[in-house]
Amino acid sequence: MAALMSVTRATFVVAALVCTSCRPTPPEMVLTNEFDGAYTKASTLTGQIKEFSIVASETEVDLIDGAQLKVWAYNGQVPGPILRVRVGDRLRVKFSNRLPQETTIHWHGVRLPNNMDGVPHATQPPVLPGGTFVYDFTPKDAGTFWFHPHVRASEQVERGLYGVLIVEDTKPAAFSQDVVWVLDDWLLDENRQIREAFNTRHDLAHDGRWGNAITVNGRTNTILHVQANERIRLRIVNSSNGRVYAPDFAGLAAKVIAIDGLYLRAPMDPGRMEIAPGNRVDLDLTFKRGESQRVPIVDRFYG
Image (spheres, rainbow, N blue to C red):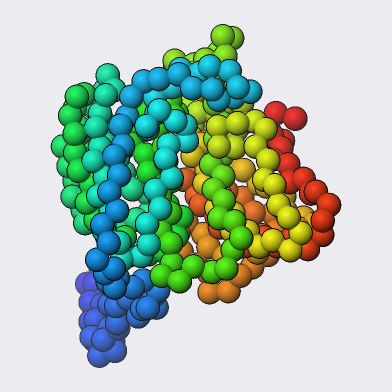
């Protein structure tokens, strides 16, 4: 036993001496070096202040198939407003809560000061019913982002509380159209209203709440009209709770140029691209022929 302990000590000492002599680079420095330059540390400020007002409230809107649907909405619309700013612009959003629950706005994927991130009891107090809060920050990165609550998000987002933040480049590329598609699925009851049972044991034990109606920008009949020789930037956002989409762009001149708000090193073919909840994908589409082309979004899960 003594001999075994002696060998063990000797092995340990040698290992310690080897590690001390080679002085490996700390993991955080390896990551820092690998991604150096991927993020701009600070934006060049434009001096412009873009101000918006957002009100969260209960309402009814014409949504799926044009029927009246009781929702919670930003500024009375689902999806909520598209906020457009340019890199270096200062964004100021006065938020008012007219819901029966406390809430916040989380700016998904945006690099910003911690106290503007919208995480209740961690970065800010929740905004109580009847309360207000001003979100004030300058986005550092150009890209496609979205915003939604971080209070009871599995319910509040499902009721319709989400919008899109577009941060444009200093010199945007020459697209003839800049289009946003927000994908969502809705779980409706027999009255064609949002099913009130949230966070059921089934949903929690599986991969979230799946719906029985799929929409693009709140509609089932969304159509993108294009002309021959147009170049379009299509920004796709998945606001669903658990559904993964796999749109098929076969036959189109399509390139993926950004994922989750970050540009790729080089454009790539979409292939069988899967878009998970919270993902954003930006496509560069060109149309060289005059005939119409259909890009269906098919729910293959239910057959």
